[in-house]
View 1 (cartoon, rainbow, N blue to C red):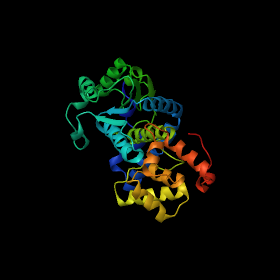
View 2 (view 1 turned 90 degrees about the horizontal axis):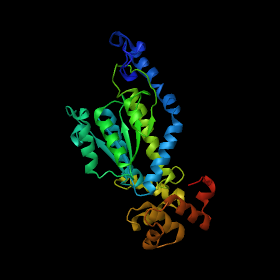
View 3 (view 1 turned 60 degrees about the vertical axis):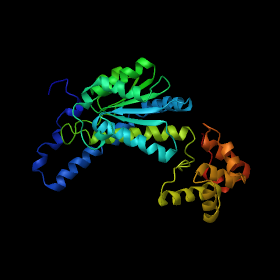
View 4 (view 1 turned 180 degrees about the vertical axis):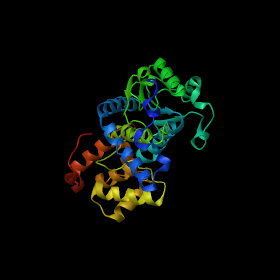
Length: 312
């Protein structure tokens, strides 16, 4: 193989003649390769931690976390961004996919090869120096993503490259590189497999850890979950019960009175406050977990004593 071939494009000797193997062996080969992903991500945890610090700083200052990518990489960014609204009650995480929304379901020819299109897409969302841009590309050389990173750096935004190739061009363009090395794929060049799994794990960490540090998580509970269906309403009632020590009937009533706003309902129960009083406590940009923990301490809520007091 030429030395310039990205590791994600190399052939994997462990899966040679994959098509001739018995089905159980095909699955064992893929499974053995998948087992390499989590350890690879574990090796780059210090860089992920630094990235989270940047993201928290940006979001606290009114900036945004923006994912940018093409193909599988871009779709994974859009997926994580789409889940942040209903999970954490925030609109500060945005996913941009080369080719636009239609590219989620069907490849858009040539979309990933145009670096100028990335700059145009970022201009549409008014990217600024207050934002953090995460460029995602398994190979680390996608022109669209490279163009977006270069444009972001010109504006003074912090940039992070998420790749699976430690020597990728993107890693030299961005302020920081996160590159879990997952090795050649079981199916040569199919980076939707190990590389894509590693990207998903890292994106989970970036968004979840950032939201935890910003107080949008209480203990391990989604206290900002947006209630859009019956399942989530039941989950919210359970979170209310665990966070306040109240019974199901009281929790459901408070949730109804709070018009489905879970943090408001929690404070209504803990403080005996009205909906408007609870809303005032949850001023714009407030660390919700910190406010709730303070209320738990004041009221001596059993739920607080049971779960400890990790920092917020």
